[in-house]
Length: 283
Image 1 (cartoon, helix red, strand yellow):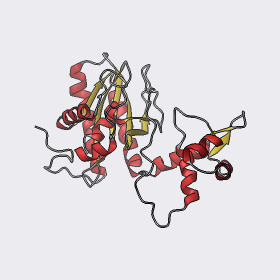
Image 2 (spheres, one colour):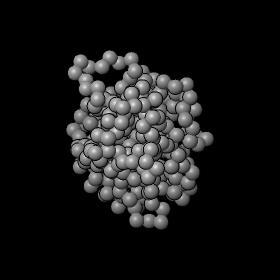
Image 3 (cartoon, helix red, strand yellow):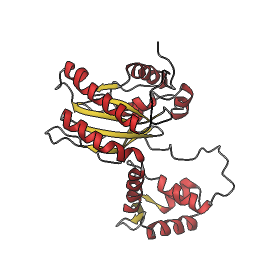
């Protein structure tokens, strides 16, 4: 799936002062891992040294250590490296450690069985959403998304219902750029367009899309809150665009989806209050 964004949300701000007890070698090793992305599968040592402004000898030692630990592997050409399975195992261990995954899995499987469509749960990391649970429907039209997949939050309904919980200031920090990457004619072109769309999602209490990110795919998504009242995840149902009647979407799919999201929020100790979301009141 298209995703031109390189994830930089995990990087420390350049202006931030490093903590007193930071370990420079460890920091540099992690910076090396962060240079890889879905659009950049392999990198050579000279390139890393130049981009990270680290001496080549230091880069060589760091790469050797990461390779020994199973986080990097050398390509057949002998001059470039790529991420290895060690990184993947860390990612899956992180997903498995989330409380929400244990509580959500049976609920998502029940929702899939009730609706007959694939269901997902995602969390936000900066400007991306990460898929952490997938309940795949056994139909001809089934989800091809894999656990760990990243997609742009502003271009997906899963991302929009999480972003709708953010204040304007928080959104400004997530999207400092004047223009947003475009993935379809419906993608918000800038932050003002995104905020207008999020106001609609916030007022509705869920988000809908039809070929919003990928042609032929429709989806509805609802937010999951924890005991603080903040949105920490989102659940969606995906189906083929144009193949489900409007009444069925609004009456059956949305109803079952919102009920599931509310049940999961309750299990995370969220109690509904008569307050507006952090993003503010919508008139």
